[in-house]
Image 1 (cartoon, rainbow, N blue to C red):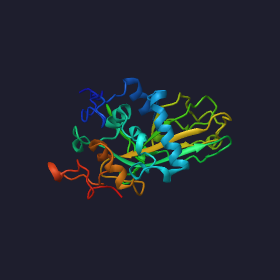
Image 2 (image 1 turned 180 degrees about the vertical axis):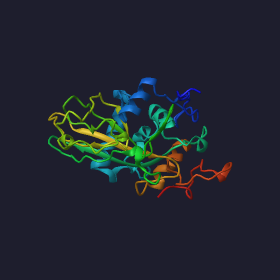
Image 3 (image 1 turned 120 degrees about the horizontal axis):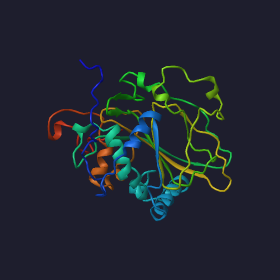
Image 4 (image 1 turned 90 degrees about the vertical axis):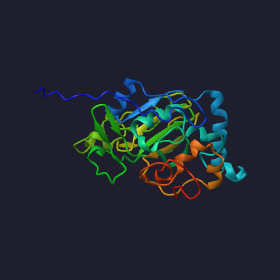
Length: 290
């Protein structure tokens, strides 16, 4: 009898195949899957063009500094022009593979749900040092900071999608990541108490890039060092259908202004069984997360 385990062929979730704007889902490459599983994070550069970034950046800055001037149906950080960040085809491709509950998805509904968000505008000298997370592979299922794996498949639990709206150059001060710590069996080394330790990794990327990581990974903010350019970043978080970590959600008026498929990101926190209204594949005002 062979002692070599049978490796399952990786087959990504096939629904939905397009995002809410009708754009085809873009799946991870084999290299990106390997990097995400090994390190706990992956960076996808330049998903948005300079032209696509203009209205997104304008909305985010207005949300930060003059939000009352926004129309009611756009008065949320991910409202208006910024809503395209919620289900960009490449983001959907990653979340379909590492987070989606496939039986709760179809061409009209995502198999994952939006969990929370914040926008940061950090200027020279701004500091956000505070390492947290790690050991997610040993977490119980009641903990959203959970990482699970078997040959050919991973599940990341609470998953963070960081949009870098402005360029992040080497040394600027992007998010720090203790690669591999989502699987760590030992406490992190004392050396990692210093942000200058070589144990920490980070990334550089052009504007419009996204960095996706499992919240089971140890990570931290750090000092922003660029005097010429602020860090403008969106930190979106996603979860599986029946789990919610962050409180609250966007105003009803904002969700109502979104395409129907995008609205399913905000449906209630339950799964159910069967077809139709017996399964949580729809959004309406009575079925929304609060």
